[in-house]
Length: 112
Image (cartoon, rainbow, N blue to C red):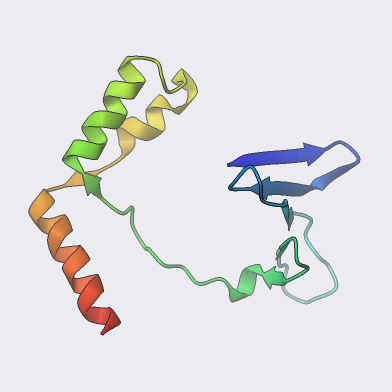
């Protein structure tokens, strides 16, 4: 992910997930026109999303597998991941592989 902020427009955060993508824009300035303060996100094609229209998907951290957590911690230990991020990776929770498999199976069942 690439993030860019210009001193000319400090309330606009530009971001993109892939090198070849165009930047999407996130306007972090609080709009005072409405009674309720909201932030808006506009994509490169001009689509605008209001913070109010975004739904919370997870109410708690999503657990990762023990193997993934071990690999991430190993990358931290080898300093492949900058020290600044180590606290984040150390705080990730992991669950048993069996429980994760059950969650994934439930997600598949819900889609049917």
